[in-house]
Image (cartoon, rainbow, N blue to C red; front, side, top):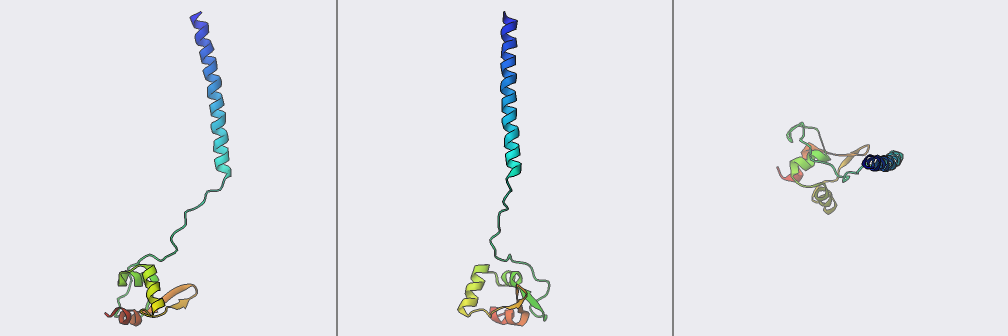
Length: 108
């Protein structure tokens, strides 16, 4: 009798396991079917170490100005709006400033 009862439990356990495996398989299929959304960045430039010094002629992009000036992108654009920093020039969509203008604006 004990053997038959154990066999009955194993059979019920196998049925429950196959049902959970089926549910898991359908969840995996549903997850694969839904597109994953990529987290967006802040949209602001990140400070980048400039490759040239302020004394050399050249261009500083937004990231370079942030690194040299030591302020955030929001603060930089607030300074531009207030007139405390010169307006950038455009190269397509990228903002840039001549190094001599950055040096003068920062008082260096």
